[in-house]
Image 1 (cartoon, one colour):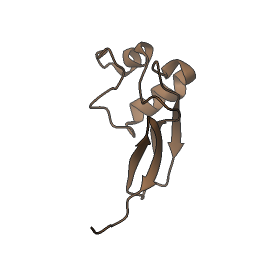
Image 2 (tube, helix red, strand yellow; image 1 turned 60 degrees about the vertical axis):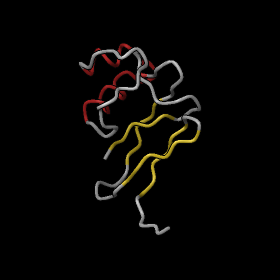
Image 3 (cartoon, one colour; image 1 turned 30 degrees about the horizontal axis):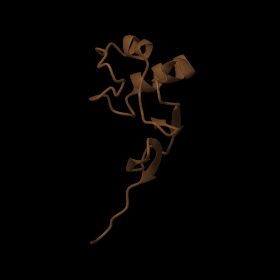
Image 4 (cartoon, helix red, strand yellow; image 1 turned 90 degrees about the vertical axis):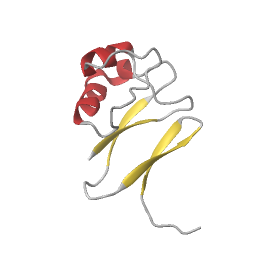
Length: 90
């Protein structure tokens, strides 16, 4: 499975050009709310545009993980990484 994440401090964001290709109305910020990070169309747009898909403070990357992994994105000041879900107790 392919997932789009941000690889720099600042935060996930898409360019207006990426929004156009996604067919999603520009929100003025580039957050693409409502679009899943593993959405095949999003992945395709980011792969197709490369750096031109990046929002103002973003450096987007497509990361591939095994299909059977339950995952989540962790964020530190906008820099993201993908982690496998594990059980935890208080």
